[in-house]
Length: 466
Image 1 (tube, rainbow, N blue to C red):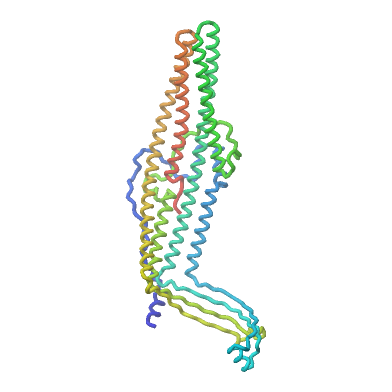
Image 2 (tube, rainbow, N blue to C red):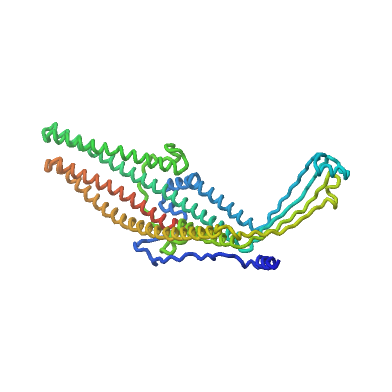
């Protein structure tokens, strides 16, 4: 009996929580990114920076109807319920019950025969009404650690949901930018096809005048047909991106919940916003926050496993009414009460607790490694995105100069051909070079805009740890 006062004192003081106390893991990061870049203030609605109302409508629909986002929200609901359940385990459980029983005793059994001799009726009706309570006292903090783990898991689920939202929105914006880039390339090809057909008419006229040979006509026809053939894969790619956006908006592919048929220029690239330095990534990247919270949950579960080395104390009680017949059910004589104190201790379990503690420690080591890996991957994504964005701007500027120069060269070649100063091949070469440069320019503009989205996503997309 000397153990009981000590256990109760430990419970009263709440000073017996076993297991390690959690400390956020330290990660050594450089004070600045290696790639030089302008990084704006974090903005959770960063896509508005493109200044495209149609894109804003698409993102609104994605946030409201995307099924991956809905599933992530459902996982938060589950984690929140688990956290409530873990907290409730620390509190007493109270229940109520009522019963009515009708019985007839056999006179051939010892109990029935004895009751009959004492004058008790063979048949009777038994009514009972009562409440019972039980409470497992958290002597060594096992349930407290479980509650800590559940709360950390809830925070991880919330961060995971934010990561899903960022990923899905980024994918939708990326699909939109790819669509606009493909539409711009299609417009370039269609314009070039008109130019080639005009040139074909000119060559046909010169052949009729005896100024050009039939081989020039065939060459001009082949070049025009080649440009026309290039339109089909672009149209197919455009349809693919539109279908991709349909699904991201929670709609069946091909239903076009938002009209994207009309072409529009590729929006200018964003100034990326988010974590201004690598250390901020630990708070601004939702995937990193989720990984860190999983470390915290695993750390708490070590304490929950260690608590099984120690005894568990429980209290129970019953207060109710019981009577044969309803007449005396609510009388003082019908009151019945009981109370109990229970002790459970896993003294000899052939190493099961040792194995559970080792498993919990192994899981904590796994989550810690995954957390550090997530941090390193995040820095890689940021550096790659910033480099791609910077080099993309350089490429676009150079291609704009190239297109301007080749456009002048093409005009000069056409004028010279009309004057008979150069051969058709010179005009076709100038046209082909200009077409390739314009196509590369539109691709580069789309890639630059997409690189800015990748940079925003890598920097956390305006997320801030709660």
